[in-house]
Length: 289
Image (cartoon, rainbow, N blue to C red; front, top):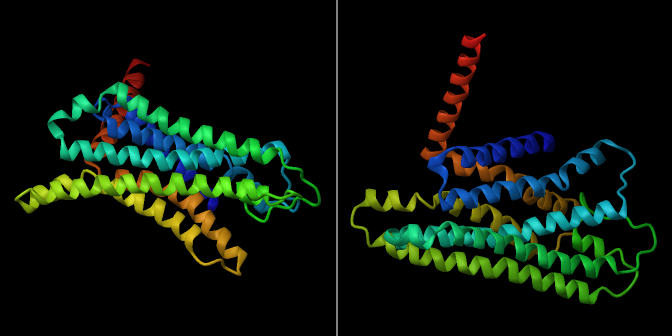
């Protein structure tokens, strides 16, 4: 099941990236950020799913210290970056709906690149700090990680010393990267809702709000899973906690391209154009031979 979901993640997100690069109609800020999100999801899932699948089938479930650190760092960077990127995409929706006449001026190419770079930069720098603190800890004993993957908190708990500083740092980073972007998303949608309600016709309100409906669904799935995972009472069943983490790590990246392409006419049009072009090129090759 995990293998099938991983293949859907690779296919769905790769298709969105290819379409946003090849189709000129998708050269807009929204699809630029969506391309970043798809690229991020591929890297995030590829950092742990292949090794996890191998461990599911093998009796000896081992991983080297270096591979564990790399896996932990990549997945943590992608998770933090996605939090910021979703807030950036909410700001894009806010400008598109609340200030449509100035949208091309405000959301210019330079600003989009800067906002995407900020998302990646914040995720990378925070993960670098956390990783440096983690790898300096002394490790002794059996070093068995009670998880499907090398998760940072499970990793530092293996240390045979006081990890109070690491736990506080991880908690602060998680709170900042979870709740600050979520607050910005919430504020953006307050303004969006206010603008939408001022539109007289129901059809007009529906059309405008549908612009950001996919983003709302992605935010609900992403943050809903995270908040459930971190804020629910501590379960005595460790397997349930790990399955919840697995849902967040596998199902959410799989749903993102499906949500964004399900009722998106621009993506459907780009798919038809791309398919027609491939068919035409194949016919031209056959005609040539």
